[in-house]
Amino acid sequence: MEKRVYEVWKGSNKFFLGGRLIFGPDARSLPVTLLLISVPSIIFCIFVARHLRHRFSPYNAGYGIMVVAVVFTIYVLIILFLTSARDPGIIPRNSRPPEEEPHHDSSVPAQARNRLTPGRQFPRTKEVMVNGMQVRVKYCSTCMLYRPPRCSHCSICNNCVERFDHHCPWVGQCIGLRNYRFFFMFVSSTTLLCIYVFSMSALYIKVLMDDNHRTVWEAMKESPPSVVLMAYCFIALWFVGGLTGFHLYLIGTNQTTYENFRHRADNRINIFDRGCPSNFDEIFCTKLNPSKNNFRALVQEEVPRPTEEAKAEDVGGDTHPKIEVDLENRQDLLKISEQHNIEEGIDLSKISRRQNDEENDSRESNDPLRSTLEADSIMGINHRASLTMTMIRSDPEPSSYGNSSSEIAADSHSNSTVTIKEAGRLFE
Image (cartoon, rainbow, N blue to C red; front, side, top):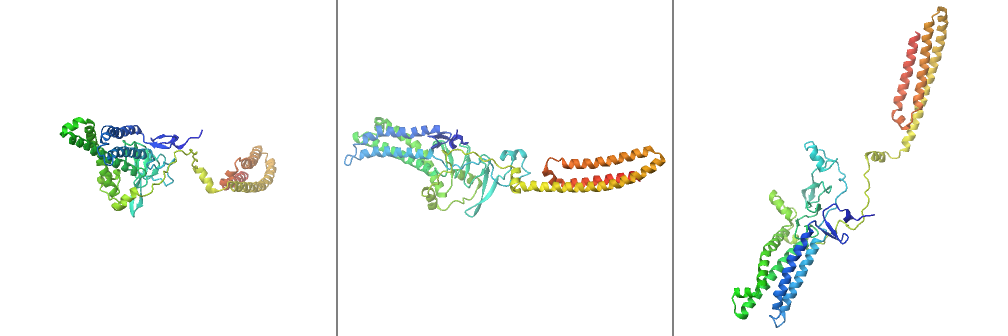
């Protein structure tokens, strides 16, 4: 059964609706964030905005207070969903290391090199040009790729994310290139919602004071929910308000949270800063690139990487010409061997004639031992010649003749020469 990409995803993300929604591994904190936003808004509408409906009678402006609260809350929740349930800019990881020359560094221990890229050692960093300046990018051994500038690997999601800012547990997702705009809108909108609820709650306390000429404490006792909402929004403003101000500074200087802490420690120059107006335009007015991952696509079988032997065959081309060459070399070798055997036969005939002459002499001298030795020598010569031909004709692999034909011919010639010399030495 074929599987889809999200079903075999190697990151720590969680998918819903068949891969249409992607969250971080800590998506369980998202319901907590929803409650922290929706519950105060519901309390505000029931205990504060409902009593202010008829306080501004000329145009029924009191209803507008509740409508604004409801619409603003829904808007914040939608922005939260857009931040959490989308691809933050994940770079697809490679299934194998990049096709580059391995770098062997003798100063690095072998165990450390193997931890980086098993079997192949790549440089940990390399230089690329950004805005006319060299920027050092790192090699990610988990995703098996060189990270683009401003990219970092999130240890929580286990993915490399473009323009990585940070991992936010409150939204349960990494904040990167494709959702940073929505994250800032969520934080800033939450800040405005806290200011609005705080202001309207304080206004209701003021209305209670004016109706019966009460003191602040008496009005607060009459509407405890207003006091609770004011305290809650005041505390929340320290967090979301401070976060909004900090990210306004980052956008104005074209930095990320990760770069801000790292550059501050390393005293680096920000080469991405193009001026405050251009930096804001880059964040809010540029078109978002589509996701580099199709999580619903069917998984395709990986094409195995060709081995060194296959590469050698591809470089060498067709193997049939090589076999033909080997066969030709074998035929040449047989011809050479036959020629040597013919020469040996001529030499043997001479030796045989000489032997007959010496046999006649031996009969005259009646030396049976000498004739026996001469016969053995001739049989040994014939045996060596026949053995040479048998070894040449019985080789089962034609390709081996193409590689060593000259060596076999040389050995055959050497054996024939040595045999003839030995035979001549015996009959001297």
